[in-house]
Amino acid sequence: MKNTGEILDLIKNANEITLKNHSNKVYLERAIFLSWYCDKGDCAFCYMSTQKDKILDPSKAKRRIPNILAEAEMCKRLDWNIEFLSGGYKTFTTKQIKDIAIEIKNITNKCVWLNTGITKELDEYSDEIIGITGAVETVNPELHKKICPSKPLDDISEMLDTAKDLGFKKAITIILGLGETLDDINYLIQYIKDHDIDRVIFYSLNPHKETIYANSSQPASLYYAEVVSTIRLNFPNIEIICGTWIDNLANIGILILSGANGITKFPLFKMFGTKYGKRVEEEVKWAGRELQGTFTDKNKLGPEKSEYNNKLDKYIKRYIKESLKNKY
Image (cartoon, rainbow, N blue to C red; front, side):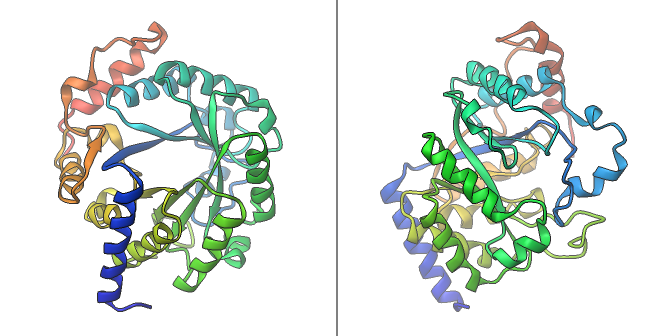
């Protein structure tokens, strides 16, 4: 473990490398979820693992497609990037996911990242998809076997290699605070090299009730920053997205300085226009970056009717109403 001065030097160097190889912009990112049910449902940290046995009819845990598309339209209006489409196993078919991605591309004029589980059907997708995300989750492969027993790393790796052969970009998700140590970062560095990863998405543990992590704490900010800085210094050109929670907004500035290109894991419509949304913007400002996306500009919410399809109107109206509530 480095001392505080060494960590601060690491962050300083990572910031210089980031500014040299990337734009001055920081992007607001949002994952769009397709469902709240997962057929595997045994990842030890995951909220879905607490819901699987409670959901008697998985089809009712699927979101309505117009609702999904309306969320994508709101992301476009507010200039948020769609981090990826995400959902549990065996909720939507490959064709249904492809159709949703095509519609979202038509709405946003951007190709879509996927994080919809291990699949051997990547060749079904085309230019509606920009990249495939593998849920690696932890930088310790032995720990992965214990906490994600139904998502073997070998299968994830094979999928990512196939994605490369098909011309898609490759991303991985990593959750910090699951029991890994700084020594495990060497494994992550090698994994990125071995599978030519284009994008790493870091999250800090969100301890959910009814999971083995319920009484765990989120990782320390300087630990998080050291991990991100190390990856930035080893991979100057890679895209790094960092997630933090509403109770840890103070992490944002230091994560940006450590190498983050984008920030994620915020309840967009709940935080919009609040002191918490304002805090996100202030964190980016004081890190010396230009923010793409807004948490406060009510004019960008736009009209209560969809600009894409009138079947989305009631959902657009609902999202705008939620954004304008006095929530705190």
